[in-house]
Length: 262
Image 1 (tube, rainbow, N blue to C red):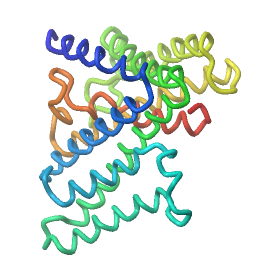
Image 2 (cartoon, one colour; image 1 turned 90 degrees about the horizontal axis):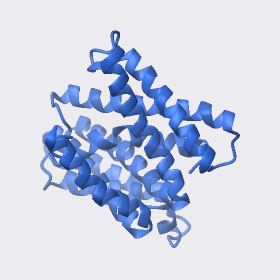
Image 3 (spheres, helix red, strand yellow; image 1 turned 90 degrees about the vertical axis):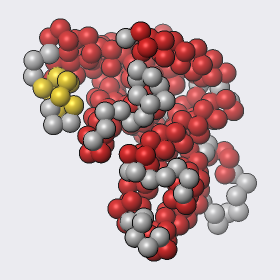
């Protein structure tokens, strides 16, 4: 517990000034976090971090994360997603020249990881570009859902939510976490409004975003269970890896974008 607290305090001391400063600091943070998260998947997949596939996928995820404004000077025939697709083609070509050391399954997992992680951190940057309030809204939803689910689950949890994926999660904790997040998120939006929706609609959307965040948590839990690991990494002592900390946010941010809030 002491190690978890120390890590959390140090991480917040670094993280909070970065998101307040915004600009290039958040861009760099998004790139670094995305690369580290991708490396965690590569390690789970038992792939070397110094390898052609790691290099190709690293460039690919940077292309996915990059803010759209960075591409505005490209020739008109080069779409950003076409650039990403070129990296996918290189991964497919790698399956041919690697003599079965890099399989089609490997290419599929890494491509999906580039998109899953990359799009999440792309909208992490995009949210801060919209405003500090927009990013804080998303963060508060995730943090309050996790905290509410943990505390209520410990007190009242009896019915397992997904025992085959995450045995400690309960329906009571899940529902309680979403209710806490909906209340906190709606109050936050009331005082710091963002977007064009009414308060009633935002209450409903905040509930939806909280549920999506829990799916993000479960998706990452399923990934870890598939590869037989407890944590996605060890970069955050007591907390695991970057994927362990940002799993919910990676799904929440694209869905918030879908509703035009970032």
